[in-house]
Image 1 (cartoon, rainbow over the protein chains, first blue to last red):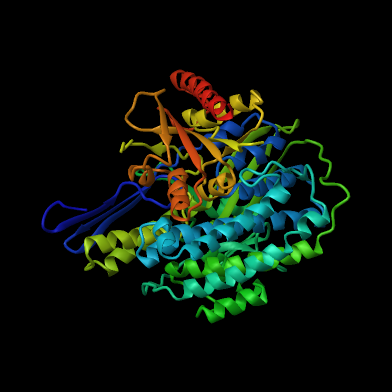
Image 2 (image 1 turned 30 degrees about the vertical axis):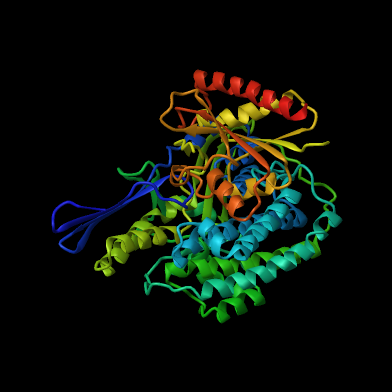
Length: 434
Length: 154
């Protein structure tokens, strides 16, 4: 932070640690009023949408899974569903259940990583998880074990944990035997207990008093907490099929970020992710998850974004309980996939990535090759809401010291677990020799 | 097998020079060196910790970005050299390679030998083309890693 004049303050964070990808934040303050907030992200233009054109429909899950190392399953599921929609096929019940289980594995590993390794340090006043480990090694070990169990579930069903290779349009190349999955039950029971501990732990944190009037948008399914399918609903009256998504949500290009910002046409910024799912689907949570939420002091709705860390933990409880149910009920399908004949068509897929809804749309030619692709990740949908939060948060806390304000701005961004440009990870390297 | 040797190639196939680590791993896999396991990873830190925890010798090959000329090969012996602070805050995966190393150190979970081969890249934009000097450096890194493995296996 530099003081330009006595009246003008600028908070600038060039690189944000602990968000996926590279991001930067600029907050401008003049005469004790916030004048501008820019949450800059360097997400590259839509390389993948262009890269997909001309490729076979069957390649979409594998290619798009490479967009994100943290949520490959989300990309595989949204693209598979979109292709199945375009080709007019529906997978059977067991394949659907297996997909849901695979997705639970991703929720567990992604939420465990974010809650403990990325977001908790903000609340505890630590720079990073390494500092937590120095003081509370057992807490970090629990986080690693929890994440590992999510990864193991993904490995059994997906073939491997990062960029699973097993899922395909129409089902899976190979499905596990019952005994392979049943072997996970004890571990999942441990994970459930660890998740309940996680909710308890996060409920003891201190939260800034900051409730916002969000439009929450998530999937909603008549029978279950939404993961792979449902209608798109909001707390402000939206209720549409996923096929209608682009009529209601549009992306805008903004100068300070390569990424596109999504808006709900006619009403503006909206909020996707765990808080949106929780607020719109509380009634579909498992009894243990509901009880954990209640014991943690959460109501049926929550409008404080900082409490997303508790809600993510409640979703961990849900994902573990749901995994146990799915594993116990699992019967190996006779055929791991359904047969598909390519044809021309347009298809839509929308699933709940750990960070919120991930929308895919594809147009196919007669031979099944991709003519056009559209992918809208959760982070670009939350971007405008993140900037609005920052504007309101800084306005409300303008008297805070610069260090504290900067810290809390970063914390506010991490409420959304933003995944900015997942596909790269190179290190900025300076060698220090001893 | 006396020594468990693990080679981990890290990178993304869709980020130009960021492919370098993966390319080196693939070359090494093709050599089919007995006693050596070769895997590919995206660079997410906790997954790496899980991967290397039972290995005795780990070679981690990754593209890096510092002020060195493209194609420079950096060798870092993690047990002997500190990972500089600047490793952390520019890493685009917030819990990445450097964090995984330092967390392993704190939790006493570092493998006995962990060597990083960092290949200096220059173009990390979206795409699949690798810069020729970086690709050449990848081939040199393959030879260097093989040389080290041979010395261990003697």
